Length: 328
Length: 264
Image (cartoon, rainbow over all chains, first blue to last red; front, side):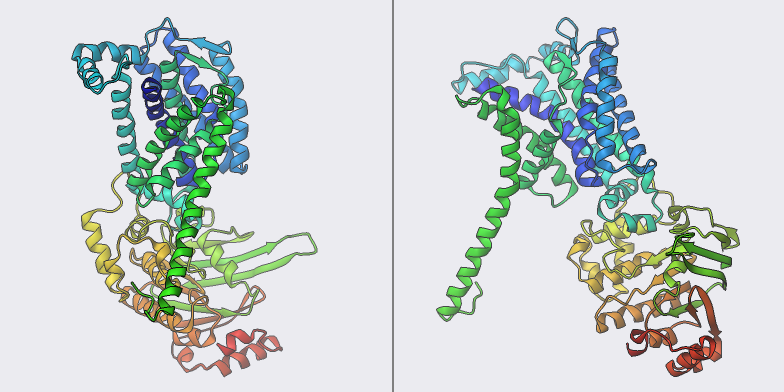
């Protein structure tokens, strides 16, 4: 149980980078971008292909992000210069990327099991610090028997993901970032304030897909393989993370919203892991579970809200009837 | 400051819906001139605004700002010289962003946007100063989301955002038409004040003849895509609504076709 939850948090924190990318398009730019289903795999494919061909894992991972950036920019160009509807532009790019991903990999699946990945290297470095035995010591003192083999991935990824979050927060507060956010809010207005909306959208969608592809490259290295179908349904996972996070943690400021997205991604993984432990559910039911989670996250806050309003009104009526003035 | 040379625009050319929206318009605004534009629906007032701001490109003719030909500059590039306030109070501000963020975006209008923080301590002080001139108490609500403000407050903020960087040209497109009378009066007063204090070259479209007479140093009347009447200085000061209606009848040989303009 603990081990599977540990694994859920571990991959959740990586998927959080992808969710941040989706947040940038869906929420900030108001651009429902389906490119991510393809660019995630592109990231995985580029990272896997590069590592197999002897490129250092850290550079391979960065190359994955660059590939994603290019893919996103093309979607942005299709939408802004080609005047193609944003949904359709994303679908077209996703479809095209499927073939491109196959070309990059040369086969449907690339294995990294015999290669040194970024995480392999990090674990080596991590071992020399010796924190694992300390953390696992605490856990076994708490009475847990199965202990995680390494804490390296989790702790280092928390740092990387939060570094990306802080950079994103900062970017969205710069002069350029404010204009980017205004595009999703009031495009006419920001154009009248001399912002080149086309180029901002292109760079914004590019940046978003760079994050998604980065997550793809990392997931491939964590799982030890890259598969041409690994992006299937990813957009819903990204949305689920955003919606769960927003429902639980709110969106008052940018800093809070991006934190919500990260936590939402981790919680999503935990929910899926717990759901799959229910006896009658199978791995194949995962998409169904995801859909149910999203619906629940969308509907529940509304129900709670209307209940609260209803109670408030009933209370006010009672106050008036008993002679009070209806104020607390 | 602003010059239009033989500008013509035709919509849906070659179809039964063909419409000459602007017909050989020549217009020149001196620096600091405040021009009000009246005319009935379909006279071409909005088209004129869109030609100047670059939303539309004329079929023929030239547009000069500061002596520079801008007819082929896209809207966002021309916005460096032009401040605009729209009729819809929701159109000029970004609702899910804060007041200070909206002001920061407007502050960058005539500069190159960089990867520097948009809202700094220094700028906050500056924004507070500007906001206090509105007398709406907005200077104490810098971090409030603009979507929470009323229509009047949002329009006042839009006006501030389009003027505090002192644009070469200010375009006001019926910016008080969607407000209730008291709010409209507030915005009209603010407009008068800011244009006078900053000496902005202003073009204001209005449906309200009285407003067109009260404000500005020059008045032009448009009809069917043409400027049919242009008066300024002392002559304008003496004008009444009755004069305008008579003038229209004399030129066009028909009644002015817009009750709203007369009654409000």
